[in-house]
Amino acid sequence: MSGSLKLQVQVKLKSKKEGIEVFEDHLVVRVKEPPVDGKANKKIIELLAKHFSVSKSQVTLISGAKNKLKTFKIE
Image (tube, rainbow, N blue to C red; front, side, top):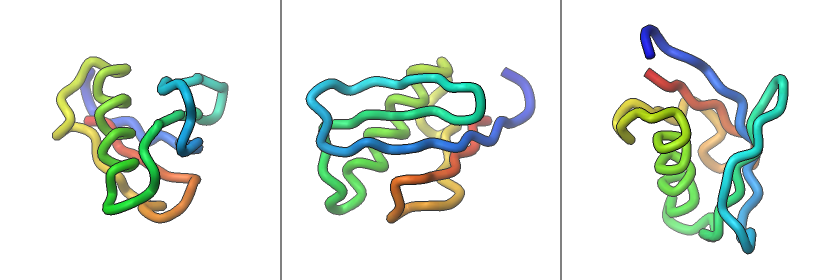
């Protein structure tokens, strides 16, 4: 992947199943982790990295660290 991509992500916390749903203008990411000590954000980064076949270091949280709507940059 060349360049970078900005993504709007809606987060669903404490889900029974983890995964990513793709919509036209955003993604919905479901994680099992609670929003404690950044655990949910770390898991979201892990899932996005796997989905886009990049390393975790290439996924950056730009805004929304404590919100359910987040913006990520994928390098």
